[in-house]
Image 1 (cartoon, rainbow, N blue to C red):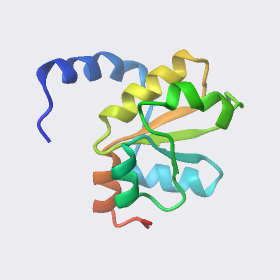
Image 2 (cartoon, helix red, strand yellow; image 1 turned 120 degrees about the vertical axis):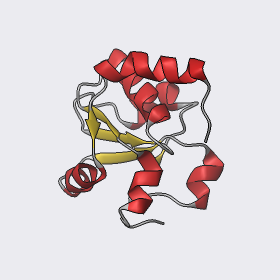
Image 3 (cartoon, rainbow, N blue to C red; image 1 turned 180 degrees about the vertical axis):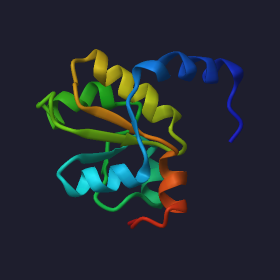
Length: 119
């Protein structure tokens, strides 16, 4: 997907503040109890998603996260299509006081390329 220069600038601004994990790290952390959260649009999630992933779309995550995950120390790993939207969402959750939130580098694209399980 082609991204606008302006969008990429916003992503570049937040990246120094965002912790990232690889797909391999995400899988291991998920096995250890981390929650995997898909922040893509509804239709993207419905077309396929990482096994065990919870869907909280990018458009509502800031609104819904506290009611669904009130423990701000719980480990959360966010992913999107390629890692940009999840980075933006991760940055916002950190601003909301979440201390153990990560963005999965490469997102859904990296997950499927790694041949990890999907639903």
